[in-house]
Amino acid sequence: MQKIKVKRLLGFLLAAAMLVSVFALFGCAEKEKEAAPVVEPPKYVIQPAALGENVEIHTEEQLEYLNDDPRNIADHSLTVANVERSQPKEVTLSWSVTGRETPPEETTYQILVSTSPTMENAKTYQTTGNSCSICNLYIGTTYYWRVSFAEDGKIYESETASFTTTSQGPRNLKVDGVTNCRDIGGWKTNDGRTVKQGMLFRTAKIDAVTEEGKKTMLEELGVKTEIDLRGSTSKSALDGVNVLNYTCESTATLLDLKPELPEIFLQLADEQNYPIFFHCQIGTDRTGGLAFLINALLGVAEEDLYRDYCFSNFGEICGKDETSYTVRDPMYLENKITFFMNRTAGKTLQEKVRNYLKSIGISDATLNAVARILLE
Image (tube, rainbow, N blue to C red; front, side):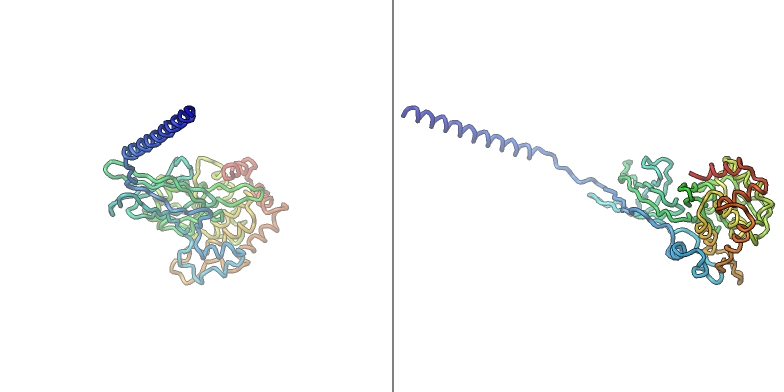
């Protein structure tokens, strides 16, 4: 009996001890809870809007043509090409700002945009709104961007966001005061390579380029050399750019460029000349013919060569004239190519173009150098 009482007593004491422990723990938790600091939400949180993959840089009417057979260009042309339709669609970056407070209306946001996730060589934009439109982006390229602003000596910055542009060519360009501008790069070749972007550009004349347009060409595109196919002896509209003048007649066929091609390709084979832009008057025949030969040499598909050539119809290439210079006849370019192809040896267009260029005195070394510079 005595043993039972002792066991009961020990059990009671043990239960009491456990109960005391529970209350002690509860009390400690309450004290910790009371002592925990109150965490306020951040003053500002900048959240970039998601853009995703395949961000479009072509307008709807450009896409209608690019997704069609290029020989149907007449269906996508104006009767008189006096409207600018060649410029790229802008990409709009936007963001929201949340947190305890709202930034003042006069806040200036800084936007950094780069092709590198580490933001190397980022281009800087500024705006007082919550969005920013940018253009002249590379095709098929991932861009990284972030937004920041300063207040009372402190920098508030978003996380880095990204988007990828569509890979469909051409990479058309906006240069204020100049029409029919695009990069010859971005096209895929028959052997799976890609023509480099940012190296060689084709345009119409640049006589009326504005100060903003000059800034685009010199600072954004970084051009070093101008090839003028009109035979002009006038000074370039761009300060500091080396001008090379060649007298080329308006082309009835691609063969009409022949007299000047050996010297032009020597310049294209010199890497120190790049980035280069070349032009004639409206950027269609002489300019289009040279672009055709260069990209054919590099192995761009014949259909893409047609597509790029006829894209000139989207430029303001007629001004106020009543005569249309657009390539509205589906056989226009085909006649040029057929005449050329029938007079040149080779199984493929690429072989024919290379053999033709060699036949007029351009060496394998020069042609190989051009390919090395322009292909990746």
